[in-house]
Image (cartoon, rainbow, N blue to C red):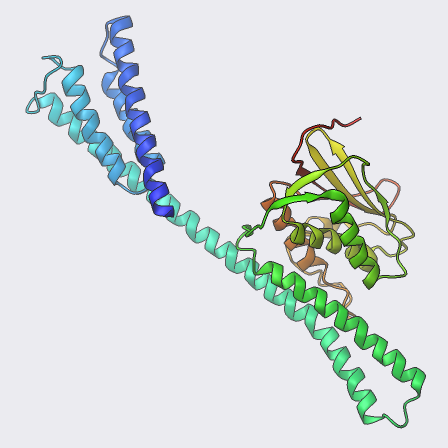
Length: 354
């Protein structure tokens, strides 16, 4: 199916280019009574076709058609074919050489781009595997150690100590569950492409579902929510957008040391709903900001708990927002803390930023 689309697109481009070149030459002949530019303009058309289309077929076809057009309309005797004339043969040879060389060059460039994309894809997979192994090892070790301590010393361990160990197991298990959700989303991500299941989503319902999930995991954390009172419907994949917002809120909980306030705001700016997640914590170090969305882990990050999921979460978030034709941005607030933002186009354009 994809090959048919490419063939149709290349055929359309070839036809449009050759017709435009032919009409341009007719205009020059009628307007200025000159045919000196005719061969060069047709060569330019052949070059464009060879450069823009896949492989050699369309470039060679454009060369042959151009030779016939020049011979028929712009070479004496006019509006008749004289295919054995030296001019026709030389034009055919020149245009075939141009199309062949251009086709070879563009094919090689496209192959190099494909190899580069594959290498980048493998690099992303490698980064993801390193991040996963790093992030999963510590909580699994903690769960195993806590379970072993309870089982091996069940009689001697106090009830309070058992409760503490079980709470640690619960916390690490919850984090592992959220990590699995992230990884399930990664399976829908393929080299910056995401398989979306888009449908109209009411903003208020999205935020309500998100807050219910957040409070279940973090009952002692308060999110200050500011959303417009208007009814807002946004075409989106609600599961993925909810995960983006959940990851951003969790990152503030895990990484915004000294945080006292956490905000989730939505503003209307022209035809877009702009989402903001802000905190008043320690902010993001400058040296980490440039690698924030790459999926690379900070080698100096502590590995004493399940708190290093920032790289995976944000790289997934960026790709999800990109698939929604948006851009995930991060800045440090002047008054302290970090601010993440992205914009989604609304279904109805009824609001303008005030």
